[in-house]
Image (tube, rainbow, N blue to C red; front, side, top):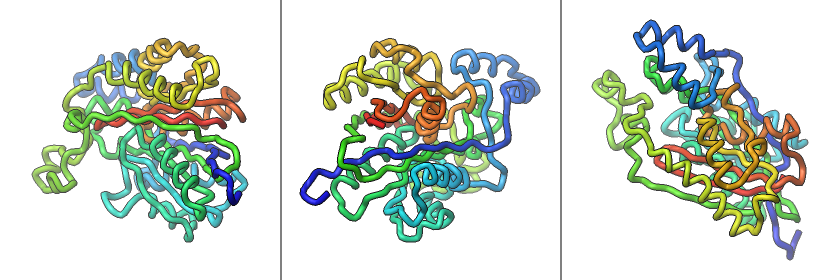
Length: 334
């Protein structure tokens, strides 16, 4: 491809969920015993989540990422030895440091691949896709990139906190390769750090190193401190879509599917209606898998491909929204 523009294209996608099913009935019994019998019904009605899946107790996030990575490579006709770079998007890492991507690289056997993590919560996967595409187009030595979103937030949660209702474990992976025709079309980003104290894990970093006191107070676990205004997603998701459509030169009638962050059915339905997208083009998986955070977008894309909801040549927009807050969107032609 010397002398021509190098493009980036997604050549395979796969997802993985572990085997332990946790139903809403399971959680309802737990919270009834805690004196909160109605909380699960309330969350179920607004989110559409019916169940979620938990990994074995001795697994870490990299263990969830590994089977998704292997399946994506197999679908792309690649091996770990073909990889030039591995990017892992997660806000439930194996460790604060080293990166989860370097742990995964060793488990995968991709000894020659470089690695880095993206940590902007549920916006991580579209952000990582944009980074991978940019590196492929600008670095002749990078031809094949594995991008993974993985999530195990329930391991970092208090299971007596009603917010545990949302968290499911899972991973999704995409292989991105150099191509001579555009697959990746563009990206858009939004953020507002004034919400940084609203939801997070607030002890264990440099602001407050973990201590016996912070562990006892639950500050090393994920906490919702202040609810985000609904308009952050109700207005932010359509704004990102319109920015992408304008920059990339497509209209809503040309879009075959939009994958939104999979946390609330009502929010997805409202955003789809706002941009004029038929509801059947906004694929949803949270009813079966729960909220899988950094993994939910690649998982939903993989599921949509497996079901034939989208396919080769289709134009798909991925819109992620995470705590911080961070939002990111990419447009890709499959």
